Image (cartoon, rainbow, N blue to C red):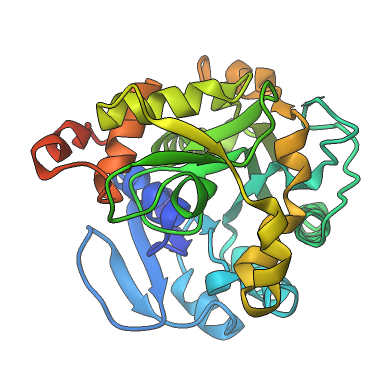
Length: 330
């Protein structure tokens, strides 16, 4: 028997998966989390299993009405080999359970050199390996929806938020565990960039899944998030959260990355994303707003303070400033 307010989250120990699980629980959902090693807590019913094991995912999804596919190979290792089999497990489980499959999407489906503002139907002509895989993932979900499965994709800009994980902010702009001494900014001066605060994206998923019956079978939406029109807003928010308006912004050492890339898969991925820092790509969220009425939004100063506090970049005396409600922008 299906529980209309039960969800399975794959990747619940990560950034967007963990925040989405938290948001769903706040909305009254019973949440299960699939994990490779036994754990407890967070209000989640943890189930030991591997996202590559189709049978294990299908068993974990019995009776749920939603599956959130937020799992990725750690550190981008074996990305090309593992991403599609993981998704295939979730699609099979969603079809077996009669559940809607929700996928956090990205801007990497697009070529930022050709598209400056994208709605859900903008041409997807990725110029990166990661973007091509993202397009393939969405195509697989669309094909499953054509067979009768329900799908939901929310595309967003670069994530940042109060959970550790791979992100440009925590792996580039600041150094986790250390006070902010400077801001290492990857973008060109004056070029806009799209950011997405994890709790706001998670709240968006929760609100959409609450409206499951009203959504189309294959639903796609764009989350606008924080549009930094010239690259200064994020830097200023970091200065404000750190309490130091004199923090300098220095350029990102793109020229050094090719020297490190042969030994570091994350660096190889970062090099591919350079075009998104040299060209503006804004997401058009009008379709999302038409469904929700307003996009969930936490003010940037509060979001950045919570993020830097969680990353250990604020003095202990200031860290309490980062304690924001479960969702400040709901």
